Image 1 (cartoon, rainbow, N blue to C red):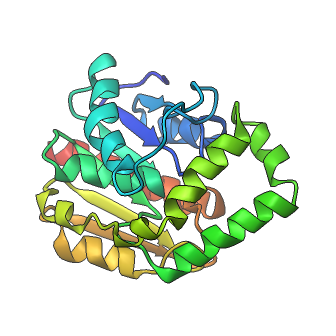
Image 2: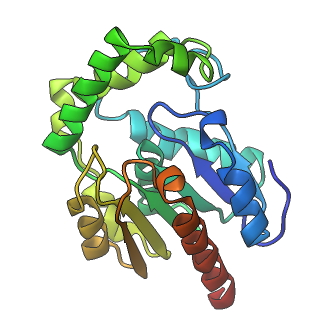
Length: 240
């Protein structure tokens, strides 16, 4: 937990993410916004306990958004967080806000609201990389059990049942401000994801589409992302 004033920014990592994989992003965001920042690794990731249960493919992000995240926010006494999510974390943030939980704002980086062929193809490529490159060793720097963490994520996304995963029904329930960010070279999703969010949420929505940027805007275009988050938070403070 990084101390600060104003709303607390709660960072929700990607599908193979952890605290360490945010690198210096939390500190830089805390510095430019002056806000407190909470960073945590979800169950099964990073140095958290290794996941013991099997995941239910279509509901695992719902479980995080509707059960685990409320428990975290209650434990840290954060009544009106600004959720800053990346990839799976962005989807979790959107589900949480769309289900009616009190949220000050949502920053969704490289979000998924439905499954696209480009995403499935990239996840197949990730599986091949895990089996044939040093990816297990690189993930081992961050996760207690990189093999289990990888396949719990990879198997879910490649499960045929997961092709029907879709969270668009939650978007009309989002009435807080949203900043949605995606790279034009995102290998896991097209701009159709951002356009669906802008079309269906009921609160103010700003889209930031970044050139020369892949699936990790906070790394590929960190200056642009941090500046946009800072503006977004200032506007939240001005209108609250």
